[in-house]
Length: 363
Figure 1 (spheres, rainbow, N blue to C red):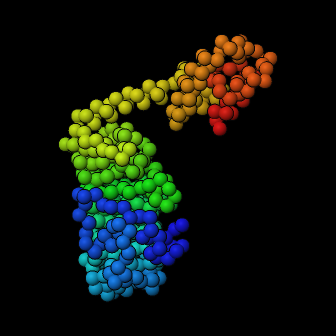
Figure 2: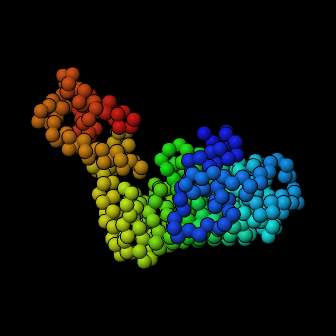
Figure 3: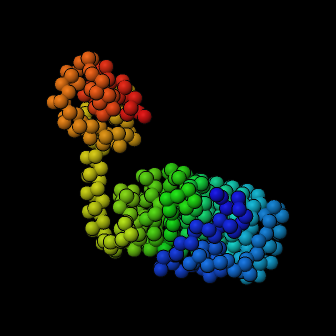
């Protein structure tokens, strides 16, 4: 269930009580500090003031609401601020949250917005170049085509459900020091699935924890700095061109292992070689003719190639028992035909079974 379906705070506080890393120094009174509660404690409503964003239609009204918060955390729920330029208002900002607000194509470049939070708010095409966003909260973030080049997101926190998007999110040369990706595996806490073409070129991830959010090869970490950073083994091939300084932490299975830069680079080198082997073609792809053969040779078919090698081994095992398969006979009995249809590599099959198995592969 989404935040807006049960009110402003029902889900905003439920299921997201993750502790910040010890290294983080979250800004007191920030959206993250107040909302990202510790130990499932209750919200102190005396620290909050909520305003209907639909009542704010001009920058003057917005600044008036900021001033009226008087030390409380201002939450603006809803409202359409698309296209606004917030940079001229940045000196009036204090910690605040936008909840389910439309902030498409907004501009925040160069301003100071420390302690800000965006909960399920639409930020597509927004620009935060060189902005200060320390202790930012990004919950169920909609960051499609958002430009945060050079921005300071130190001590930030990123979480939420599978909704949202970080497609084309650009944070080159950004400071993500002590930044935490806190992503689970369920619909409610899994973080956005839409994560294509993310760029962290030259970003500083010192002390950050990215271990719970894989980009599956769709993120560019070239020249990104990793120093005291936590990541998991499945992410290492994404970090081939990253810069490792001092010691970092490999996280998995509830444990973490401290590794120096030379050890990490060696593991990545070994993993790269293993991937090359696993992704090798099981046959000469230049001779691929059928749709099944071409599927196996496809650019994104590494998993299919791995299965084909396994099935080749299976074929070698069953061939002596079922000589009719090896000879290409069309007169297979029921047991042989079923086996042919389900598990024998396409390239080793008789023409009678080839199409059926090819459909199985593509499925």
